[in-house]
Length: 268
Image (cartoon, rainbow, N blue to C red):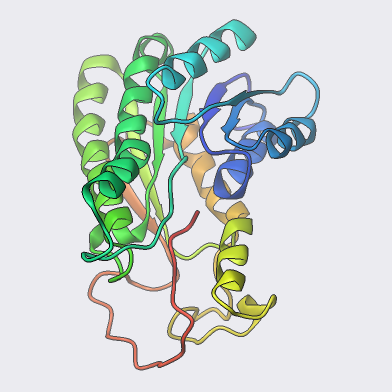
């Protein structure tokens, strides 16, 4: 098992990518702190993880006490902390006209500042274990779509945080910090979001090739499989790296010629 005896906090793990990462970590021998806002979903994940493998914390990452509560829960329950997966995020559409100060601050608070605060709260424990941080970003960090302004800004800032701390914390504390930028992922919330936009329940079965050259979009389990490498000792001393997980080159890609009303979306 690639993560045997390790303990991880996975934020935003009651659904989607976070849930997939948490359950894959357990399958690889780890124990996890499940976190989210939906208690019933969280209890389902804890049950799926199996007896003694997971504990649940319900809390808003924007609340200042939440990061410290997560760290204390991990150490109190499992006696150690080896890694943090910053996955929780607000996904919301906005452009220049619809983004006001309060909206932008709310997304930054959850998507960028909360990961920073959790890393800070966990650093002492991570230093003991020479542990790791894995931030879950988005390919939209590079510029984003016109209707993903605030979200894209928050993910761009997270990427800079990863690059910066990936150097300083590795050098000073022996803690690795890396990031995965998923592309379009078929999470439960993404399925519902597209249905709310008026698309059919099986919209994901017939996607334009410009958005899905493989004929489908990514599954949460595929992101989780990649996450295991960065959480395990297999990634060695590598730190401060950002890996894009998408089925086409995001930067420098030819402009889409497809005029379909289906557009790619953030992962969570």
